[in-house]
Every structure is written in C-alpha cells, then in structure tokens.
Image (cartoon, rainbow, N blue to C red; front, side, top):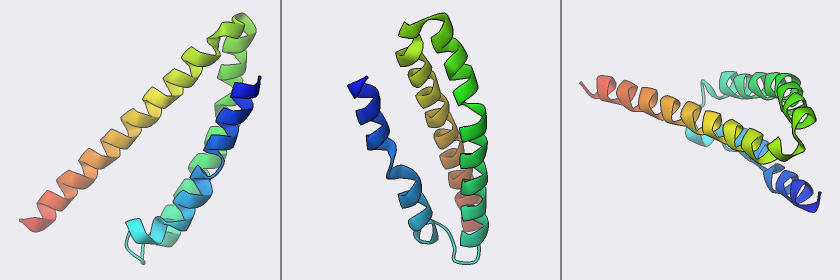
Length: 95
C-alpha cells in the first residue's frame, strides 16, 4: 500500500508542470488551445481509466503492476506518435 501512495505522490507534479510549461513548448498563439486539450485529456483519462483498472484488480489483486505497465506503454506509444508527427511537420516546414 505504501508503494502505491508513493507512486501517486511521484506523479502529482506532472500535470501542473505540463500545463505551466506549455507556452514554452508550443507557440504562444496555440498555448491556450493546447492547455484546453490537456485539461480535456486529463478529465477523460480520470473518468475512463479507473474503471478498467478497478475491474482488473477485482479479478486479480496482483494485476496492479501489469495494469500500470500497460498504461505506461500506451502513454509512451502516444508520446512517440506525437513526436514523429511533430518531426515530420517540421521537415515539411523546412522544405
């Protein structure tokens, strides 16, 4: 139980820091829209993800690590997809 609490506390600063540094990572014109998308994605994730994770834990209490690992894999895949799309957009702008 202590490790779950520590894991949660370790993740706490991620969302506020992402929102805070959005203007540095995007254009100032798009920052408002990106923060809105971040808030929408956060709300959607908070509404949708606990259910399947709870169902997995109800079936097998040892499923916490695999469920967390699956969510991390999905997050990494989305991150890599976004990076590749951004890189291809930058290449097309340079042409």
